[in-house]
Length: 413
Image (cartoon, rainbow, N blue to C red; front, side, top):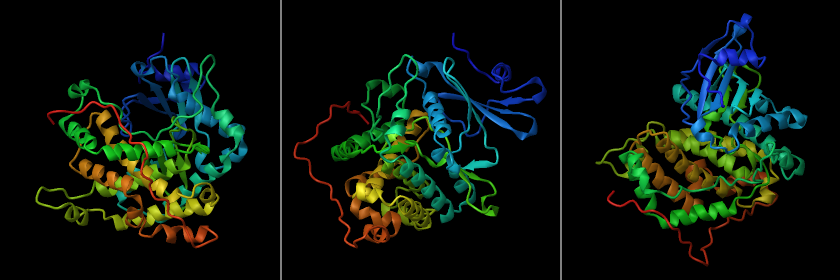
């Protein structure tokens, strides 16, 4: 029978696993301010000497006999320990200290001196390009080191004993097919979002094209939200900007543009959530009245992309459409953020419909939005990294065969 962890029995569990002793004076706190996942229980355990352990358990109702996502994170950290060239990337240093497959429990060191990048931005309203530069360089180091390396792909394809793993998982998917049962589960604001999403068949077509263009060639994080990037609380006083990337549960062999696009979506979310929305205002007026103007975020988004390309320029030989690909994935990331809120039963603000409209535009009219997002044209961004100043801009081709999707329409919304 699967053990059910709680703040009452977690200390005993750690002692039995050899991760704690009665002399540690450990205390447990199950009410973590950053823990909003409905899939996992998270308990923070504090030991003497300020050492902290984060104990996570996947909830039973989500398990359903499917291989635990924690196995993937444990496998990633085994990869770092097995291949020093990856383990030496400081931002990826192994944190997992224990994995219990039978009970779906993962224990990792808790970096109490760090805070999530989204939280840092939210509390300081300060977006230094140095942070984005460090993130771009770290991400490029991972992608470059594993690029087309069969040994890493084979390692990450390792399956739990007696089970089978898919070699690839394509995360570039749109909204799932909707069932009538959502009317009893989703808020009215969520239904409005789904209704608006379904009005645009060409949006689903653009996402389908993006999914078909997904090009797995290296190890990717696949869930690189700003919340999954940590920055040291004293980074400004250190010789080098100190960041960490965490929560590798979704990692696998994937498309590097997806990771970069997901990060860009995090910056765009900060801008979009600061918009002033009122029925008396036109969209352009709302954009101009944003509490955090896009111009303030552009230097960080540009630094993220340029530092990535500087560390991994060969990706441009492999992907001629790399810049436009990350823009499209950013649009998909905005849609995924809204759906994630709905799944967590959070009410949506009116800015969510504006975010959907913006995502639709950058997915279907990508070349027009490169300058809006980066403050530079695609040619200006790529010029330092290509031999020729002639950069081919890949236009979205019209489908020769129309794409049709069976889907449940929301009626009466």
